[in-house]
Image (cartoon, rainbow, N blue to C red; front, side):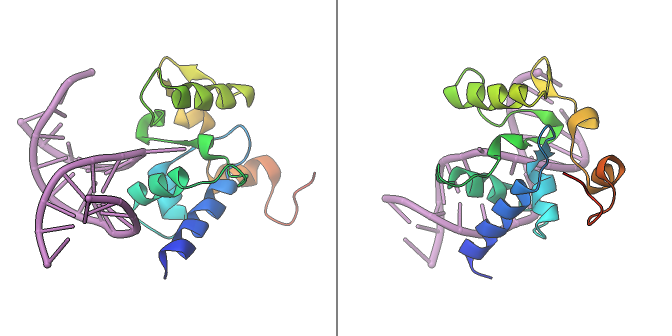
Length: 118
DNA sequence: AGCGTGACAAGGT
DNA sequence: GACCTTGCCACGC
């Protein structure tokens, strides 16, 4: 598998995170079929062009923390984008139990694939 | 062909 | 909490 295809695979997986939910780098790697390759997910997101509509801000570090250093413009932008979707912080992190994405949760909320509305 | 670096993670001290 | 170690690997020098 070429590296470009790997990045595209990661981007597609990130694009599947529903609005108002978040996932971790490691989780995205697993879901993309790339276990233990969380670093590559970070690299893939860094390489995103502005034109690509990939919700990079829904990806967090383990523990629900933002990867960027606090106080940087990127940190603030990510936090603002999440707030706009109703994802609230508890201090410096997000409660993954509450906002974390899982396929199982998707099924509970919206039913099995194919039976989803809207 | 090394070697350091990095939007990471998990386990340990 | 703050580090440290190990695993991971694409990239740039």
